[in-house]
Length: 287
Image 1 (cartoon, rainbow, N blue to C red):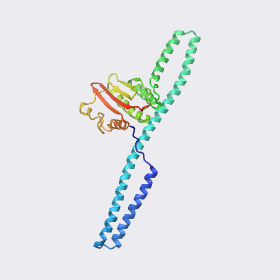
Image 2 (cartoon, one colour):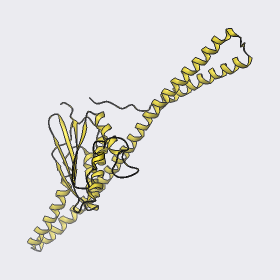
Image 3 (spheres, one colour):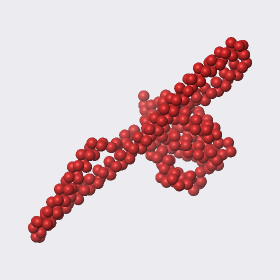
Image 4 (cartoon, one colour):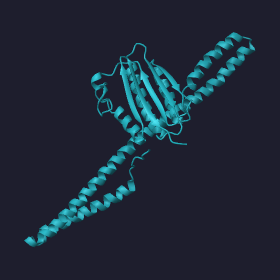
C-alpha cells in the first residue's frame, strides 16, 4: 500500500513555534518572579512544582514538534532536489528531440539530393546509418513515463561518453505504478550511476538494463561486468555508510531501499566475479 510521506506545513509549524515558545517564556517569567519576590515557604513548593512541570512539558512538546518538522523538512528538501534533477533530465530530453528534428530535416534533404542524382546505393547506405541512430533513440522512448524516458536518454548519452556499452531491454510501458515517476527516476539513476562506476574498470565495460511487467508488478534489473563487490560487505550493501568506493560514498543504496520499501517494493543483489545484478520489483495498481 502506498504511504504518503509527511510534508512540512510551514504555517502550522510557525504557529506552533510561536505558541509553545510564548508559553515557555511565560512559565520562565513566572518562575523567576515567584523565586525572587514570592513566598518561598514550605507551602509554596507545590506552586513551584506546578510551574516547573508545566514548563518542562511545554519544552518537551516543543522539542518533539521541532524534531518532527525538521525530519519532514529534510524529506521535503530531498524531494525538491530530486524533482530538480528530473526537470533537468526533461530539459535535456527536450533539447535532444529538437536537435533530432533539425537533423531529420537535414537527412531528408541529403537523401532527396542523392535520389535526384540517381546515387541509389549511396542513398541506401546513408539511410542505414540514419536507421541505426534512430534505433538507439527509439529504445529509450518505449515507455509512457516521460520522466523515465528522459532519464534513459541522459544516461545513455553519459554511458556513450564514458565508452560504456549500455544495452536496454524495455518490455513495459511503466504504467499503473504506485511509486511517483520522480522517485523511480531517483532509484534507477542511482543504480545506473553505480553500474557505470563499476563497469569503468572493465576492459570492455558493459551495462544491461532490463524492464518487464506482469499483471501485478514491474521488475527492473541493472547488470554490469565491472569489479566484483567484496564478499565482506556484500550482505551489508544496503546499510547506511557501507560502500566499496571509499570515503564520501555509501548512502545511495540505503536510500534506494528506503524509497522502494515505502511503496511496497524491494531490491536484491546477486554478485559474482565481474558480474553484478541489482534487481528491483515494484507493485502495480489494480485497474
